[in-house]
Each structure stands twice: as C-alpha cells, then as structure tokens.
Length: 373
Image (cartoon, rainbow, N blue to C red):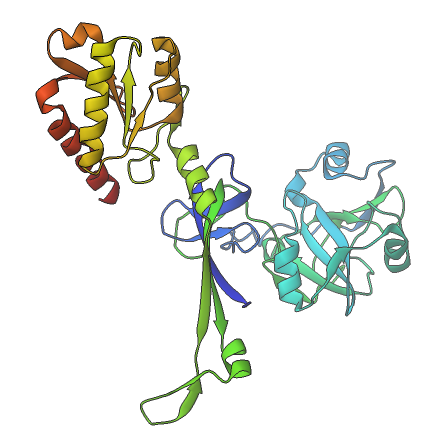
C-alpha cells in the first residue's frame, strides 16, 4: 500500500511489538520508528588524549573490551559494516547503544541493508570481525548523533587483537554525517517535549491505517471535480482491525489468577446462570424461568445446566469471565432469593427472586454504560 501509516497498539506484557512512549507528552511510536531527543552535550573542556594503540587479545565484544581496558561502554564506538545496493557503509554508535537498521536504511534511502559478511569486512577494514574502527576507513561513515561532541573514544584498530584509545572526531577520523540511527532505550530524551523521558513497553497491534495517496486512484481513473471544476484523483486510505487481536488484548488487560474478566461490551454473554443442583426440580424450574425472562429482556445468558458438582461450575464461571454470575440454590430459594456475583469486583449480592430480572437488567446496562464512558 502506502508509505505512511498509523498503528493502534494496546499495552500488554505479552505483546509482540515493542512500543516507545513519552512519560510526559503523547508521543508514541514502535521501536523501529521511534525518534530520540538530544542527549546532554558532552563537556567541551575535556583535554584531548594522544591516540595510542592497545593490544586487546581475543577481546571482541563491548563487555570484553571495556572490562579489559577499564572504560565505560559509552566511551567505546562500535563500527558496524553494512552492505547496500549502493555499496558498503559504516554505522557508528556508542558501545551501550544498538543500531536501528530501519532508521539507518531510511536515512540512506536504500531498499536493502544487511550486515556485511566477514570476507567483506576484511576487504573494507583490513581486519577481522570484532575489530572494525573508523580511523583510516575509506567508506561512507554515518555516526549516531549521540556521539557528537564526545572525546577520547575507544575504537577498533582494523587489525586483529588491536584497539585504539584516545580517538577523536576531526583529528583522527571524519564521518560523513551525524544522524539518529540507533534504537531508543528506557530513559532516553523525548524528541517532542522538554523534560520527557521515553519508556519502553510491549504491545499488541489491534488496528492499522494506511495512507495510499493517489497511487491507485490515478491508475483506475477514479476522480472528482474540485471547487474550481478541475478533475482530481481521490486521496485513498485503508484500514484493518484485528478482531481476534482486540479480544486477546482485552483479555491481557482484564484477567486475574482465576481467569478472564471480560468487559461487558465484548463479553460473549452478560450473565452466567448457574443452578447449583441440576437434579433438583425446584432449582431447575426457577433457573429455566429466569433464563426465559432474562433473554426476553434482550440479555445474553449462558445457562450452565450440566450435571456437575457446584465447585466445578463455579470454577468454570470464573475462568470464562462473564460479568455476572447468577446462582440458583435450594438454600437461597427458601428465602425467595438468588445470588449475584460480580466477576470483576467479586462482590456478592442476594436479590429477591421477584425483582431479579429487573435488577439484573439494570446491572448489565450500567456495566455497558461504564464501558462506553
């Protein structure tokens, strides 16, 4: 479809997508697209160290190198070599950051982007995987903007078991440009407001809107006349709603250790009607009358007329998560009452049998109104 789209996400710890949002304003995006505000400017009065080579035998990872050299991860520059249809490029990020390949690809304006194989890395840098660095590197170099202004960095030496310390922009190496090419992290500055911090969550995508523009309307000749009588193509869009995903998201946000707690607006039934003893003629007679009268009022009722122990039925009622459980028992019928239990609050109420239909109707409608508020 189109280049521009808007996703509708529901926060859920089991979600398949990573969501970045601001704790102060309404900025939100998925991790692939999330922008990052500017980090505090590094101190400009830090004296430049001398560039020096340091042997780092067998140390390839950020943890191994920084631990061996006794420097914090943010002082190390990771130089990652990528292949595109336009050639090889190098992406530079701090040791405690990760390259966002989607943002890098979009910045480069290329269709394909993949990490280079070891053979390509040796051809470009002269060294093996794990020791790449920007000093003397003859390819296009894009540095993440978080590196701007930093001094006295640790970089790969483009030679096995070798790193360089005291490396500085301008003096020891140049980059072609600075850009936002990294993944957002918890606590990063918000790109939209002052003082906001980015939070990382997981979520479930329940809807997606795409702007198709005039791509298809022009191809199909679908036009309209504007105010000046000129023929113009329609601007098109499309959307998809994940019905199953919406139910899954609702369950993720509404459950407890006993089972689902359905909001009344999407519950498969409004009432779980539970006769305690299905072999008792009086209990079953009252339950059947209630079922008939409740459904006549437009309420959706699940009638559990199974010949099962009461405990099993109670457990299943909680598991299914229907908003109200109405229990008909011999004991309460002696007082002319039935028991109503609210699934969410677990509040239990005894109501007069003669008023049960009207009261239950009011309870359900009140619950539905709260869902719409």
